[in-house]
Length: 207
Image 1 (cartoon, rainbow, N blue to C red):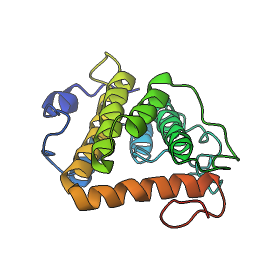
Image 2: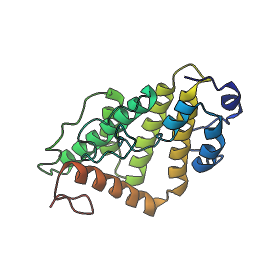
Image 3: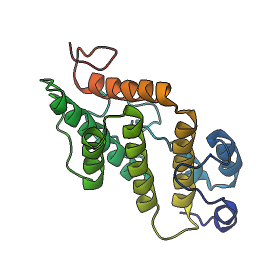
């Protein structure tokens, strides 16, 4: 794992909810040439989505979230993917219980670990009636998880990967308003429910 003192030292401080100081694509262009060869490969895999990759680098074609993603070789990326997978599966399970939908998640059991991911899903479903507010609850939990995964050693690749994930979250927030926040919320549930339960409708409601 390389040391990136100069790059990390130049990064602006990111606070949850702020306007992104640069785009994620600009940061990718800036950081990628400065990374070691292996770290550059991992950098291309950093994304908010928990989907895995095959050993040859192709997108994993297994049902979404039905199984843990194949190992990438980078602890930060693997732990992030499993955290997000746990969040999404618990989110779908909690919502199905709240709306009394039967048969949801029949193909996969929502993991209990990491516990903070499972707890965040419960808070998002039970603590608010606003879909947009639920998105903020989820993204705040994601932000905290990213910081925990980054660790205390600041000038290594984890800092660079964590910075990119945070930028992606800030970009999501910059696009939110009441209308598209609700659309995003429904789209997220539809993708989750559809990936683990055949026959879901585009709105995420089970037929």
